[in-house]
Image 1: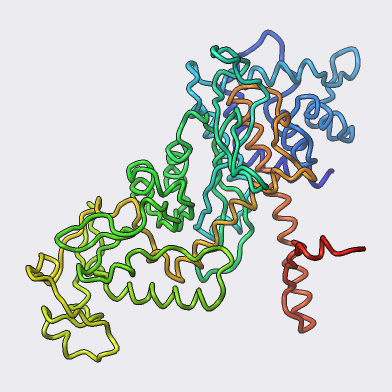
Image 2: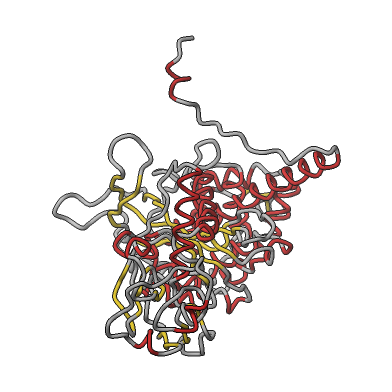
Length: 495
């Protein structure tokens, strides 16, 4: 407990959140026994112990500390007639003052800027200095978090949590693929290893809550795009089709302007050819030769459970499609425009409209029937690609190539992060985990939960690294994780 307490105190102090909160609290006639710093430490202690986000748990976490720790944190204070231990009513009073100061005057289903800033500071402070620059890649996803309030009765809008809304969540269980819940969307950005970089601990770096009546992608964009201003460079942003299917100005364009590169799955409605530009076919965000075989433009990702042979065949097809793609001739300028060169002029295919390309070896694809009336992409050496062309689907790797598949596999870091906060063995954010209603207390508790969760991930990381070092010293390979999923026949076998 003592070592955990010291580590959590360091995180709270490094974040600067206590001073920012105290500056917003009203001055009372009497000095409060419970400071904002001690309250945040108590919240983090409760979450570190895997307890629900209840004020009674917060009070119990503080009053169960050793006496020296209680006196240092102000949990026990000299009241003139003897020592006085913190009461639950004092915890409730201070927590109410803080949530009142951090909430919006007109609630709209999103955290107030000052609350979001404090949450950003808490999660960033939970990441040690050596890990902050270990990776610039982030896996992004959202999940459900229910409110304690019951939804309004049919035909009414009144309930204990008017900011909450009905939302949809997926379920990996037999039967329906999802169900409805009443509450909020929790969005999180989790550190993932860079491509060709060393592995890193999967620490939650940013989070936000938003009402289910809001688009979680649009709600999370301001949080991510503020990171470069805080000195945190954005690298790969790995997301599923739920983010990629948004309008470009809601997701892709702001992230590119912030310096990020997208690695994302595409919604079925966004895959394949989607219009032309100067005669070039725009497919999966990239310009292709107008004579590209259509099957190469309609490639889909490998299905789950695909064999090695199927993967090899699909990779050969995506490599073939890459030969027909117009390659970048210049980098993008300040306005996002760049020049793209014809694949025949770049020496990737043979085309009668480019006589020089016909001297290339015959291992390259050859255009047998060029366009009767060649468009600009065939008559010009290069064409200009504006930033809005393929803005939604354009990403770091050709979709769905082998390079894209390996890079996109890092997205599971976000799913594992949500699994750790939904694990009933540690902390489960199911309904009843937090019984304070409203987005402000729920957001503050969730930030403390992720900060405490990061410490558990770091402990497991250091243990695993020490074990791998020990095995290497004995000439053994690193220990691999065993799949614990039993096969169906083994479950049905007689005892």
